[in-house]
Length: 207
Image (cartoon, rainbow, N blue to C red; front, side, top):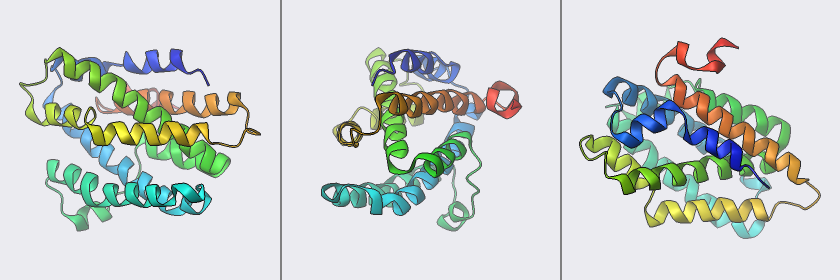
């Protein structure tokens, strides 16, 4: 599966450039975190539904990821926005990534979801590692901490998990379909990041 061009395009989006240079506007940051919170809620729900389709030897890993989403990531994101658990539970998953992933899961099930998570996690490992090495985000502590979360050993294990999960997908599913799901997720990531700047900044809002 070759998605290198799509990764290059996604890494060049405005949000990632601004975040990596430490020049991200605080309002854009808050908007991004609000979108990210909704997406994490969606991923947690989808993983709860798709766990029955996961390979048997991966079930415990899935349970661990779901627990991490519920007990670590969601409270962390909610804390950045000063939202209670009740307020989080009432959020609508109306962000671009949630819509995209939900749609492709309906069409492609577990393989489509695993391919999409492979794309998302690898994208974040790539750009956050580059940003971390540049040391330009220290003047924005919340952003700096967020980027740091995506270069630590726990996140590296998560990336490895999704890489292995894609490698284990049934050979009867052709690489071109995996690439289609991967490329589609990376395009959605770009639109998702653009949307933090407002409706007019994202192509998806105009479709």
